[in-house]
Image 1 (cartoon, rainbow, N blue to C red):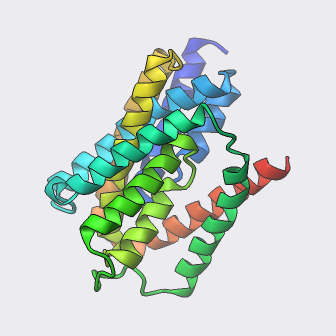
Image 2: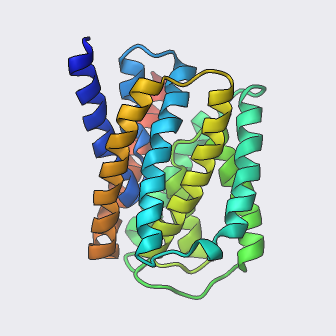
Image 3: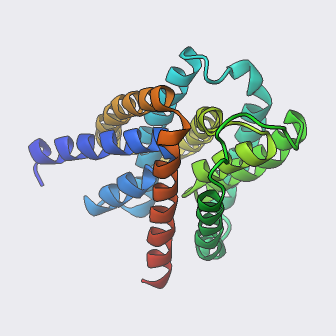
Amino acid sequence: MSAEILLPLLFGAAFVAGLVDSIAGGGGLITVPVLLGIGLPPQVALGTNKLQASFGSGSAMLHFVRAGTVKLSDCWIGILWTTIGATLGVWALQLLDATLLKQLIPWLLAIIAIYTLLSPKLGAEDSHARFKNGPFYLLFGLSLGFYDGFFGPGTGSFWTMALMLLLGCSMLRATATTKVMNFTSNFVSLIFFLSVGQVRFVEGFVMGVGQFLGARVGSRLVIKRGTAFIRPVFITMVLALVARLIYLNFK
């Protein structure tokens, strides 16, 4: 495929992925298959995906911060533990088999989708927190940071659900905070892939621009329309991710 066709295709796919991911997560459902589809080796596809995803999550994070939806000063503990978790996850990726995770994660995501469907008021507004920030971010920063560095699909969905259920965040605030944590683990993973030369820069930067612009549009929609808009997109993307992972498990 010529560059004249390939690069606009990558840009468009990344724009859509950034738009969707800033609203409900799951942008990797679009970008990873596209990168594999153009013939990149799996590890290079994953490394390039982390490059372009960092643009998207960074763009959404900046927009939410500027709009006052999330404050970085409230997230520093989460950023710290997520950094440690993602570092351990990328390191473990080189040593361990991800087969068990691939088989387990679709069912955990399905539980999230069902619970959200059956709880129409979940995330409508801030509620009583069941955890304090310190213990919450220690547990989920380490575990979800590790998971994103090691495997990745559904990380945003897990963060959003945990923030709503255990910290009492509205879906809007949970979505904004999730982008801070997503950017952290994406960036940490990217540093590793760069260090071992598993990133394609032209494709990654072209997609990064698409991600950046798509995430800006998506985050504006989130702030403007709130939970009523996020909820159906969130459920749809979780179910799509479940279907995709089950398909890959039984392929």
